[in-house]
Length: 284
Length: 316
Image (cartoon, rainbow over the protein chains, first blue to last red):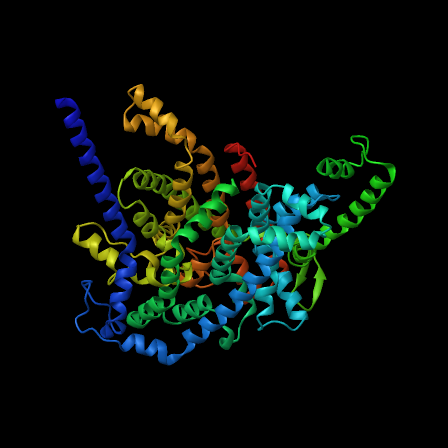
């Protein structure tokens, strides 16, 4: 009796220790964010960062945040990023739903080979494609437009793969019933299977959104026009110009650029985390 | 019965069931026309594959045998490959990429796994910690690099303040070529650990609880269960993380560009392969040389992917 009591006690103590370790490490991970917000409210940080670091600025001021909004370039880049991301997501997800469905339920010659081709695209990085794609869009006079950012999103091996896996789990009997009613393949897809694809479509939208929103190297290559800069491009150009000076302004800018994404994440965290986990678990 | 006849039509053997001859003929016609509709489903994706995957990969290979600035081209054979393979800056960029990648991976995977098991074992706040730990991964690496330039500032940064007050040495991080790679590693660990944790958690929860119960009955302690049940069951997950982490590490560009520009300042100490290619291709407009470099990088990525697959005996 005494033994089990002490066992229970031990268990309780270890679980408290575990909780504390997680909490402390969590605070360490969050420290850059916390400090970022705080320095953003510190007007003097533009001349020299507050040292020693403190949580509440000596003279809190909205000065830096004011400048970020007045300047307008961050807002503009937000609009640009939104246009690019929304178009990329629509294009990529629609194309992947169609082909993912075909690879799952379709019966046609070359299905295996074509699917292997899709899987191979997963292994092809951006770098070897950078220069030919640049010259291709240059020849079409499309540099400094959104087309080069949006059009290549039409192909994503990962999205097709996830989509195929999802449709594989849906029974074939659904199509056979519709087929007896004389429905064509497109009608079967749009009226029978697509309405059931909500969960996987949400996952695909989330993944495609993250990829497109954070895309950096390719936009850097094709966009020189400051008016068209996406959020990462604007942040990078600001950071390269100022290095580690203008701390207050930089941190205010970083805060305003990150915050909407964090809020979005907190609202959708369950779905986002599920999507990431799915892409990892299924990617195995 | 109707199901059966569809299947049969597809394998083009009509012997299985009682269909009359005429019926199976219309079935065949239907099947042929429906084959074509399937290709229509694939058109958007394969148009994309041709235009944005196959063409650029082939064109890049062609370009690597030419001296080119985008308009004037002259065939030079293997000269570009010779130039790249004998170039000090290129091998330096390979070294930097590998160095940062290796340390990022050997730190983040075990650390992330430990935290994932901790999160999995607490009774309260599981979801809270999951959301919290994944937060850095949600922020773009560009913004993160921007913040880390200040977090790791040699004199005014928060990290050196803490190190200093603990009486530890305060490195120059990004301002010193000797430590700048470790600045990038810290940033990479901070940014990637949430991903590792989420993937580990998802797979931890997939391990059947029966195994643990059986071990408990046999009197295995928590640590023993961790070593003999959890870890062996996670090898597939570690393999996945190793491969995706390594492929990502070989393509590292965004954060080093933000911190050090295209040439990876200070003193090219954080110029990765991706940055080398960007520098040669888009600041020097040496398309031929950059293409040769991308092909060498591409081959390195493929080799390591295969090694990783072999080592971890992955089942795809």
